[in-house]
Length: 234
Image 1 (cartoon, rainbow, N blue to C red):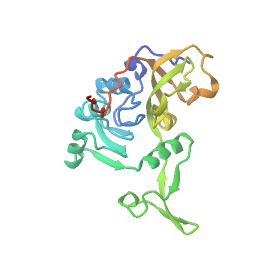
Image 2: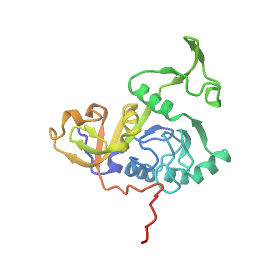
Image 3: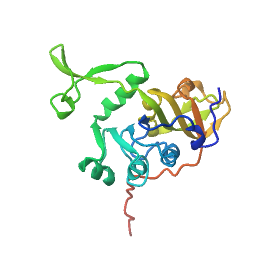
Image 4: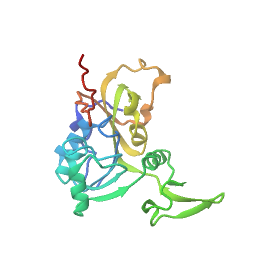
């Protein structure tokens, strides 16, 4: 099975369509599949639903798809860094399904494991619980959350071998791992592809069985909020 493609556009060829549910890895701007997001923008597909921890910033990450009105709905836990996101949401142009971060990660993981739903205490007694089934276990109330089964997963990793085994770098593992497992098709972008057998099996974070297509590319790695210490003077 061919897994390595020349670029993001080729890797998404024949996969994209209007109205898709896409699970995207990343946290803030850390570990986001920026090359694949750019290719999605250039493809012109629309009415997309994204399951992602956040919507990037106004001109980077999923934010570039909000600018072009290609996103219809966001399933997210944090959207505070994107002014265009808030404008579209408050004006009724964009649908938003808020999820606590842990719940969102578990919904993706559950989908990847073939689990259609699970009960959690997170969100009980808040707007998150409205319209959801409630059930008691050992005297405690839980709400039912559904697993996410995406049409497409897009993720960013540090290294891959030729069979698609992935290694994420430090905190860039974040939502990438559960997002990768819950899509019918997973496309990964990485900084380096190494020969099969050169990765330590004990250091592989995601087995290649989950990865269908793979690209290597150069990444901007933009810093969302850069904070530095003031230079001390003598």
